[in-house]
Length: 439
Image 1 (cartoon, one colour):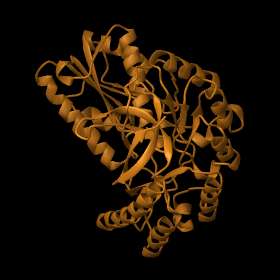
Image 2 (cartoon, helix red, strand yellow; image 1 turned 60 degrees about the vertical axis):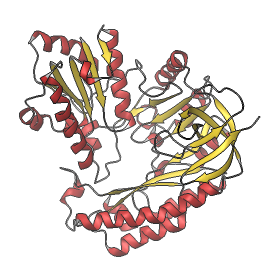
Image 3 (cartoon, rainbow, N blue to C red; image 1 turned 45 degrees about the vertical axis):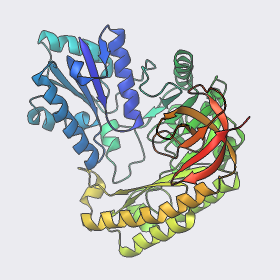
């Protein structure tokens, strides 16, 4: 039977989808990227915030339409399934099976039971159950791959449902992570490893009794890979030793994704973020001291009890900090989280207005920072061709896939996708560079 899989949400969810595809292929199922051809469709959902839940529900209903034609079975997995399984099983009669977030290794056998008519409707699991797998079928372009180093989260931010969905923070052993990386590099020729977890900066604390992120990076740097990128570092745990190590290791990208969420000490405390404004400002000063880094961060606006003064403090910080990349999210009131029980909830229209104001401030900062690199020569990983522009395109070490700046460039010689070339950045057009390959 042919199986099609739709993956929603974050890069960690993408890795779960890649694990599922590997389990299914190993068991002899045929895979297809076209849901029209699928006998079975799997939707791997996100259930983190309201917009993600809406996207997941819309996708489930969209895929259910294929049951009118070739598709015989519809399966829903992932965070939405784990979080709302009891509600979903009655609300979606079109769905034949719901799986929790740690049942993917059972998927081939459960599908066989489903086809035989002997399966249950729901397969929930304890949120703290861990089944890490190094078996993957990459769904990214082969020159880069995400590498999950831990599952769950212990930070317990008051707005966040992740601990209730994914459970406690659990690090994978270094040797398992390195073995998976070796296998990916050998099988796909991957040049860039992107390290992800809900909190990368905490890696190893639960398993080894101390943080061992630098030890892990040291082992990964020995592999035949050119770039290693870190995503999602908790500001409290980003040490100067880590910053210095990244600055001195040519394989680790000078790119730090550090979600701060706010800058007002009052709001940070309400969020249970164990960090203050002074620490955040000192951290960014330290990063800048060690050279040319891209700093990405995210912030939440409209958190309960956020006054106009709190918002103006955040806005002024964004104006002055001149971070390279920022995402701004209107607070989403999530079921059963401590923040959902706070008084002083903010009107939705106010949240969206504040979000727009911050994006306007940040756009100016971002363009100023991008302009500073015009005239410089940077390493660029070649990713494809834009036929309309008649140019190659790729990314520098200062840009993550899909979310950051592209570099468009021309060359006087044939190029190979996934390889890294030196490109002189000649001009900036909007948020993207244009340049040419130099020897």
